[in-house]
Length: 352
DNA sequence: AAAGCGGGGTC
DNA sequence: GACCCAGCTTT
Image (cartoon, rainbow, N blue to C red; front, side):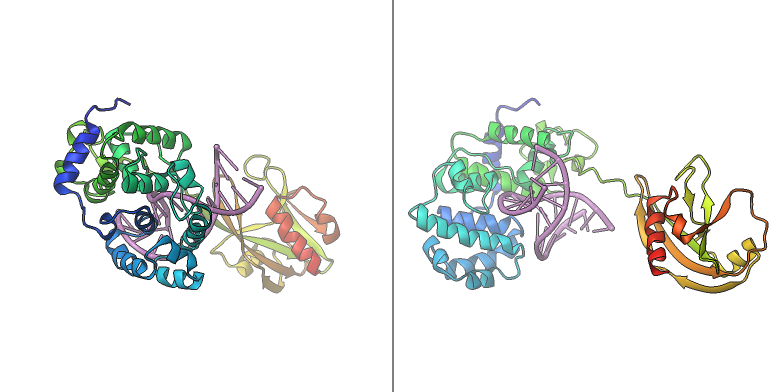
């Protein structure tokens, strides 16, 4: 990374001209009021938060009022915002502040982080905005701005990447106007440097933004590596039994999946069990029972197994030498079986 | 259909 | 420390 000298001044100058400064929590910026807004804004966008915030402040104008309220009442005011654990944490934290901190927020980030529901980023937001403390935030907006400005090549979800971004965030935090800078960075991410369709032409950082110099700035932040979704295959498994309580097993070829194990006769999922069994084994079917389908997952694909229990009479067909073999139900579990076949057979055996 | 959000809880 | 979760939006 190659940090830029005048990063903060450019961001602040932009904020002075274009930033939002009259949102409900941007006037009378007490730690309490900033705190509530930050928690609400973690999960919801500004337009939605405003009415909630105003009602909340009327109901609980001070940390004492919040601490004294019933949880019921707090949750009622949160109703519709989601993430209710955060409202509960907030209520808990209010009590801690009143009981242990004389209703004042601690003056260090570490201290504020001790409160339930507040981590490093939220603590820094509260202290920088309400008290001008020189502490950087790293919320989703700031992550996006920094990831783009430096074209950070790795996913911010990785610990290593996150550490790098925290360093960048701290590096750019100025020593003056810390609160404005925090607001400015959030604004920049929320209004210009948006996830899709960023307005690079209006951005004060455009000239040095490394993402801007690529084909597509929205390629940053690098997206979460999506676990390649595994292909799905479907097969029918046949548990074929005769009047002597034997089950027909099929020897797998030595190579490939389940090589050399004894498995069950298989059938494409769209084939008719009746027609197939009658033709393959020249026999008559006494009875078919569909068993419960289940999924077996390999390292590289899902196998959806549709098992049927087929009772048949005498087998007349000449079967390939050694490929098929009858085993007594009492013996079959001693064979080398693929795990899903073992599971399936153990259920059938227990029924018999 | 899946990622993103900031912190908490679990192992 | 790595991973999953909450609950709703956005893509």
